[in-house]
Every structure is written in C-alpha cells, then in structure tokens.
Image (tube, rainbow, N blue to C red):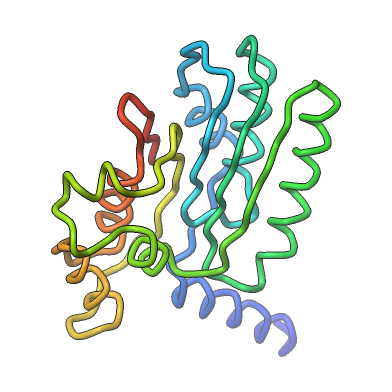
Length: 193
C-alpha cells in the first residue's frame, strides 16, 4: 500500500467517525422513496436532515414528479454538517431543480450547513411545550433521513443542545428521529432508515 493511498483512506475513516456518516446506498434510497404516499397535494415541503450528497432529496423529487399528479411546487430544506459535501449537494439539488422545471414543477431548495441538532435548537422554541413546538415551528410534509449512528458523549455540546430541547437520549440516531418527528406536519410522512 502506498503512503498517499493510506493517508487518503485514513482521512476518509476519520471523517466518517467525526460526522458518523454512513451514506445511503442507491438501492436503499429507492426503497425509502417508494414509501412516500401520493395524497393529492399540489405543494410538498421536504426536510432532509443529514442530507449528505442529496441522494434522498433528489430521488424523492424525481419520484413525486414521475408518480404523483397535479404537483406544482416542492420546497426542500437540506441540512448537512459536513462542509466538504455542500458543493456536491448544491450541484445535485440544482440538477433536480432543472429536471423539475422541465416537467413544469417549481423546486426551491435551501441548504443549511449546520448540525441538525443546532438547526432544531434554532427553529424550535425550547420555551414551549412539545405541543407548542409542533404548532409554532416550521413543519414539513415529508421528512426523509438516514441519521448518523453514534453515542452522544455526556457533557458534550450536542447533549446540552438536546437537553434544551427536552430530548434525553444517549445516541445521535434517536435524537435525529425525535427531532424529525417534531418537524413533521400533521398527517405528514417521516421516513427513516
């Protein structure tokens, strides 16, 4: 093994550990997207926490356009902590936006380069009860996610953020699911691997 190859692999492993990244295989992403139900809406709002390179967001837009009727607009909020993925994520969302436009569907998207827990802390009021958070917060009709997997260290900034949100858990996966649940609209759909 040459040194450069070893160093590159080590960087990838360290990055995977730092962000607890496990990218969604295409075959799994397609199964997840197929779980989204057509309920006859004209407009869809989608949240993709831990968006990575945007495979779930792009496939879900394609799925909606190809299989649902009467869709006029899709708004995507993609949350990704890793700054090294933002350019690829933006490129993929721009590509799916052009595809949508060629099918007479408007796609708007925003990318938030933040930890999803911090996004939740900023966009959910910790002063409200859980019920108050559900009615006072931005909500999304579809949330699709492949959350990271790792323990949350006691005393960490993530643990403190979750405590403010009244979420008590020891792993990041369940924190993502609970936080996602707080953002899903009434009768909305939450799809997680």
